[in-house]
Length: 477
Image (tube, rainbow, N blue to C red; front, side):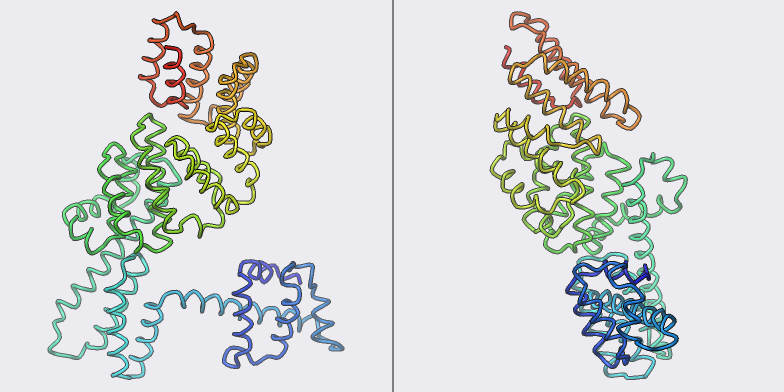
């Protein structure tokens, strides 16, 4: 089968969805072609190993159009029609997930046919659904605006209708639709690109108006428009990272409403909160370690990681390292065992080995840690740096100072070669290497030098593994 579009679509749906698609094809309302069903059966027989080359067009022609002169054209038409039905199916299952959108489509249809009693009932159901919906996102406000517009048109000839109030409510829905959409766009942009507040305000219209409106109505926004409140706090965390209250406000808001948030909104706030903590810790603010651990454990309780079948290596390792730094070894072991199968397959082996090395080091199983590190590939810079950091600490603990010197030198050469892409992590890691080297050359009798090293670490709070370095200095005292 050479139709790459159909091949891609079939690979993009789950086995359960493919089965449901077969049920749709069996309905005369959607499909009256017996040959469409034959093609479905042919694909179904090879579904687990499906590929464009498994069922070439020649095989379809032979199975479904034997002896027909225009079978090549027939095959292309059949595949095109099959693809169109699959697209219709994808639309149906997407709509099926939004009961409010379904009701609005029904409401429009009832209005067109002047079916009054059912119209009123459907409108009430939409209002009830809206009142219960915590996740007032872009879709919510679009549906709300559409609903109000349909009602206004429906009651347009009613002289008793307060038109000013109706249009004002429509305008308010349009405003909230604009606000939440704009905030989501800006936060998506800022999560992928480092821009200053000045350049954002200069390049993107309306930000001042939105922020001023929200801040002047903050209690109303928090109570009645929780997603706008979340997006506003996320934006402030990015534009004004020194204003820590925005992080704590969002953290409190999220933890109070975790059970109400949709999967999309949970993912949005999770990464915003976690990344803020990680960035603060990278700059030396260790107070956020406890906040990060609370984020991981609270989100784990609601099944965030369980639902994510493609956990990225940075996210998985962040959870492991945070738990180890909090000395929550039992929880780390639980998390590792339960979710290691959910790691993105591309670097699953390296991620598991690096996580295992960190866990072995925390348990003082230094030889095991070395063995795990030796099995880590360096597809990404993160794997190299974290492996070297752990290996250097292992050599120090074992007193293998020749190996330690060689590892430090190799790491320094690597840092210099990758300085442009490492950004602030270049300085953080270089400080770590220099301090470890100084540690190896210190003697317990050198009280002044030990005191100076501790002072330097206090000044450079963003140093990699700063807590471990302090622990080693204290041991020398």
